[in-house]
Image 1 (cartoon, rainbow over the protein chains, first blue to last red):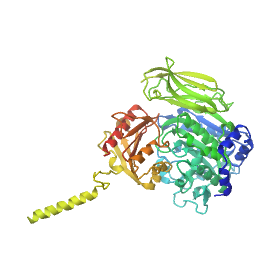
Image 2: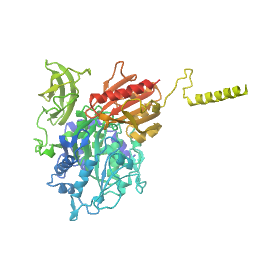
Image 3: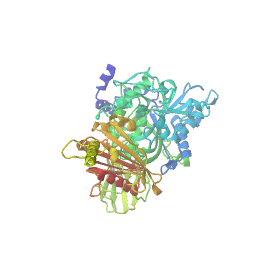
Image 4: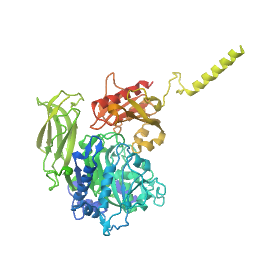
Amino acid sequence: MPSSETERNEIDRRDFLKRAAIGTAGFALTSSLTGFPGGRGWAGEDLTRVVIVTDQAATSGTAIETDVVSVMTDRGIMELTAQGSVGQAWRSLFPGITASSRIGIKVNCINRYLSSHPEVTRAIVDGLAAMEVDRAPFPRNNIVVWERHNYELTRAGYSIYEGSDPDRHRCFGTDQSGYGYDFDQQIDVHGRMNYPSSILTQHCDYLINLSVMKNHTMSGITGSLKNHYGSIHSPSSLHGTASQHCDPFIPALNRQLIGQLGVVQVVNICDAIFGIISGGPHGNPQVAYNGLLFSRDPVALDYQEMQILAGYGCGTTALATHLDTAAWPPYQLGTSNPEDMEVRYIADPSTGVTDGDRESSRPADYRLELAYPNPFNARTVIPYVIGSRSSVPARLDIYNVRGQRVRTLYRGRRDLGRYRAVWDGRDDRGALLASGIYFCRLFAGGHEDTVKLSFIR
Amino acid sequence: MQSLTKALAWLLVISLLLAGCTKDKGTDSEEIILDPVDLLPSAEEISGWTPQGVAEEWVGEALYQPINGEAEIYLRHGFQEAAFQDYQGSGSWANAVLSVRIFDQGNAEQAADLYDDPGSGTGTPWTGSEAAGSQARTEQYALSCIVEFHEAEYFVHVDISSGDDQALEVIKLFARNISQKIP
């Protein structure tokens, strides 16, 4: 382990945060972003851009609507890059690309029931194939979708293909015959030796990181940073002790892959069509967020994913200390400060209906949005928006028609962003309430908003 | 007489063999220790549900193989062995995925510690005479439900890919079935 890394880790993080709060950390943050090839939201921007695309038509029960996901992917990448066409948008992410360049898409298929969906991957591949490179469409066969094991890909619905059909992308695991781990490229991950996949080091010039929205018992959340545990031969060596929460192993691994191996990770995409908010990373999907997140900055992307999980009441987000660690020296992988993020929301692009604040890119106020379903039986989802640029006290309560508070859904501090709360018709003690009218009230930043809910048992 | 002696000798051999096959803790109580796989509901036990394929059994650090990223929490609390089994439903449950995971944590204290570990799960306490195990909880989401309980040295996790109340009842049925088999 480099001694400088040890010394820097001893810097008090609270001191950093304090300095950031009083505005003295601006220089450090700027240098952290420029130290990472994908750190900026986009060239010339002061803020790190994160695009969140949601479309309620993306799923029907547990089925995915391929066409809708395709529209979401196209819109997301165009919004991220501010380009007018899908091909131009993707092309703008790959400076220096040639017709012989190879693009890897690292998917996450560790959970057999909730992997990076093939529908999302297909939409990305279609987008890449729409790029014009050397006056021709980019060859699909130069694209490799990969994960650790072939069986993980197969059970997630991918077809293993290693052939040379120019119209077909390749897809296989590191365990595919002829690949394996690159034992010439030992990497020191905070004192633990590891070897990267040879797909990453020898068969990709560019990388797209496609993670899945899940909570994680050890690291709080999965995400694009954690996704690289599938890029090395011994991920289990990097979980650390119970109190470490994979921190600083996650940032250290990413810094090694990005810094030492020179991997050009051009964009991070989080498949948040479904999500796991408790008991992850394994198990069945628990919620349908119907979303995709896009950013060049993996830390900012993971931060926004964490906010979505927190909005669902995820109990492990506080364990995700690796995000702050990743933002600061010695790792400098991006920003975990929402003040430095420009979050752009796009809602329901498949119906042509866009979010009203898309142009301004930031929610403008504090409000509750329409709950769904409403009336409801088992549970209802209550979206709400916090429009403050800084963290504010917030609480979300359910009241009965007599004005008695029966349930607190959230009480704490909230940063700028869009959240979702879920109410199951129960009071604070877990007892099922009677059918009837209830009111959900949001108090945040000195503002108040109320929506009516109809609960039918 | 000779045949009677022979029969008694065979009986003794068989008894010894059977005794050798029965696991015990070597205590006077003759307590039978079941492998997690022995606790799994079999094909006929819960109407409408049949095991899908063969149960997976995992011992020690091999747990990293099926649940890499989640194995540490079990290993931290004394994990010994586990059995995983998916079940296929019929009728209205034909498209549902139901999974049972039974972990032997070595002793009751470690199983309880695992249950209380902040990373292992949260949920609504499931109490009352119908509840499974020493302590149990349920989690109900839009798309899936979970029941978890601990009893003796076992920690049990059951989930199903449906979030409605009927689905929760189904996995409670599985949980009770498993709980009743624990000596």
